[in-house]
Length: 128
Image (cartoon, rainbow, N blue to C red; front, side, top):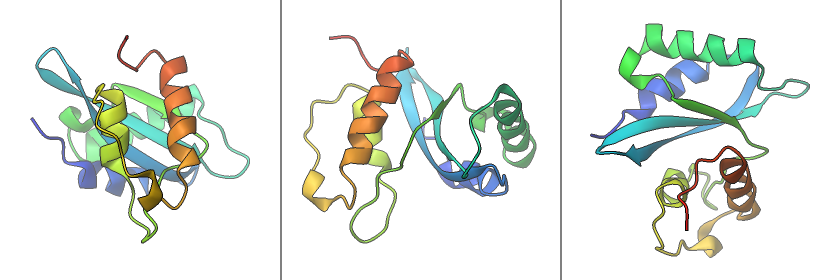
């Protein structure tokens, strides 16, 4: 099952408290959990109210299937040098793939390191 990330981005982009976001699917027991990483806008934080607002917007604007199981605050979103969000490297990270990513292609490879730390703190990285 593949999640339609575009529908989620469309909803998240309407929320002023969010500066940037990244959506990935986490493989779990033959299904996929939606994980939404958000960079709060200046002076904002990922509060319970903001999480509820995001989930409500996504449910109403996309579908209940698109509602994230996890919403994690991160300091930055990784982009390629050409300006595209790097979903695949984060999806590999969260799903335990050992496939090395081409960090040289990233404009901000340190963002991947920060995301790894945030996912680990949230208990979303595979064990081992």
